[in-house]
Length: 120
Image (cartoon, rainbow, N blue to C red; front, side, top):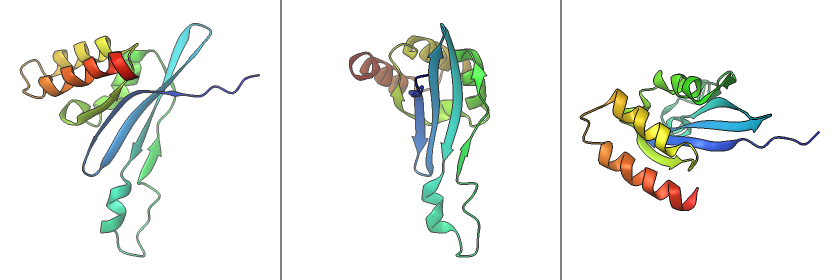
């Protein structure tokens, strides 16, 4: 059996780290998992403090709607879009608009969407 390599569906971030929604297709269905990386917080921890919680993975869910629901906990619409998968870009942009209809960050998200059609 071939090993499935997850693709970046959406990566958002800020100074403190990033949140990435990964996805893969199997038998016509898409599955998603979330990875958070707050590695830059390492600089602020005392030597004896745990670094175990700086990188986390979520459970696996089926469907882009449930994938974005994983992100809702982290207020992803308030973060900077870094990568948007071209096959999901329009859906993600529409979901941003639903969640933040008059947000001035919409311009940033529209630019990232346009870029995704070219590169990702």
